[in-house]
Length: 314
Ligand code: 5GP
Ligand code: MN
Image (cartoon, rainbow, N blue to C red; front, side, top):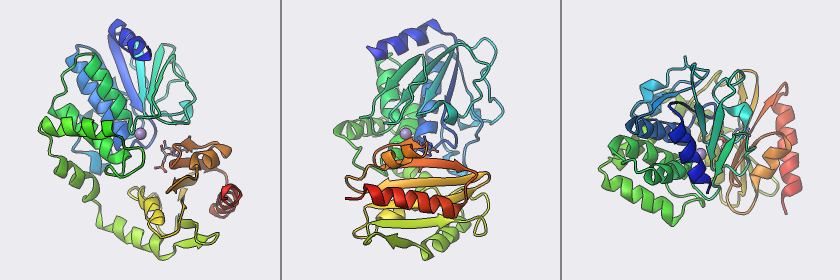
């Protein structure tokens, strides 16, 4: 089994780096830090490799200070790099260009390039943290309150607070066990969601003011241009508002970023947004995916995405 291969490789390694996808979300950070704490307890020299720093709202995560943004390459003598919650090599928040050791890829994205030497992909896991939970359990690493806080954060983030269709009985069972370990689930929720800078709500207001719908109300469209906010951080969940409208099946959010345009796609029922994302080199899940365009204007990207969605609408 693939789990055994992962454990065998971990057992054979002493110095282990852990990383995730760029702009890490709650699942990426929660999974990585849960694994970090777990493997430390297991006796490994383990550390985080990350080009990113932790966003303010994730600062409560245990060991978040170990994500410093300085360690961007594997340290010398690293035997193993474990990448969590990342579907493609290009999106890893680490520079692995001079690293020739083993890579383990642990992920739940349907779009996954299997770039690792060992690839543990479970698309039925609502969050990568569900896989990390199983891994720690199988390795007999006791899940303490710190690990539980990390894993619960991942679950909450990737399930939209347990409301998305990726949620299974198992997601709730794991969450139940984590709560039993004494985590403050309500506080974790508040840390994640009730902790925004005032300005990010004002920006949200600006974006929502200009929401549009297309194709008989089936597609909603939101955008954030640089003139409203340059280098805005805390707007990642804006796209979910687009799905709240009655009759909308697909929500599109396009944001101008430093060197291009970032697209977030979400769907409510059967529409596969991953398919649309993959056409343009992006990826993700059936109901949540993303694309990054370089050298294109927001107007061009809007055109391309809306046309592509229109062609897929039945
Ligand atoms: P979000 O819209 O929240 O940034 O991302 C939604 C999902 O799409 C996540 O699972 C994320 O991994 C994936 N995703 C977002 N942006 C990109 C991208 O530029 N390329 C790829 N391959 N996947 C992306
Ligand atoms: Mn995830």
